[in-house]
Length: 316
Image (tube, rainbow, N blue to C red; front, side, top):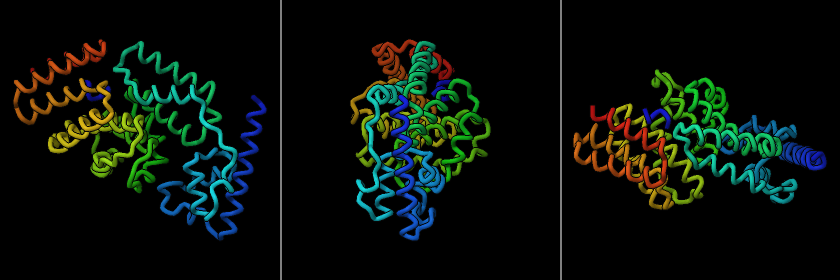
């Protein structure tokens, strides 16, 4: 059960900046005699489609993309960079809450999440860089798929990025969110072995398990939640060796971030591990009691209810 839940002036200035930047990128690329494909290389940092949108003035690039273009065009960053505007603090706060919080199907939390999306779309979305728009799009889709269990809502978004994801050796925040969406779709997919992400699953999870120690705190939260989804999938597949690896990584993330918001979920998977793999009901009950204790401490009533239901279902 729980495994599946799991002002005009400003606008003109931005348009002018985009046109200026688009013209510069296209001009310098052609001066270097580079095709779009040559500039993008393996498309792990920038796809040809994204470059086309940038050169057409249709996409506002992030600083990361600008830096990549400057390196590929052998230019000074500030010679290429348009006027750079920091993202609004309210937007960053709203995004942080969307990245960190879990609704547990609680109607009040779902309403609060919907209000955050509403504020972002009404006040900020159109002026965001493309990568930030993608973050909002993925978060919205994740919420929609989780609530409706309609995997078709997420497939169209993944189609454009799945090939790019295959080439990644390290994952950005956007990559982690796309992986999170992919795993949610796989959890809700009745025929997981026919899912396009099935062949990618071992490769993705192995990279998620690598501790590079350089992720920012909010990226650690996304990594954590993505690993929980992977955990649910490997329980479903009966791969308890991988289950143990993922659990140990989650404990490591929890201790590093000193964020115990999801300790009850770790305890839940621990009890499932001891019941299903170790056949140790006594040890499993210890983790159940710990999960209940922490859910009560953080006053997550809906989570508490679901944990009790899950335990009764597991010990039948």
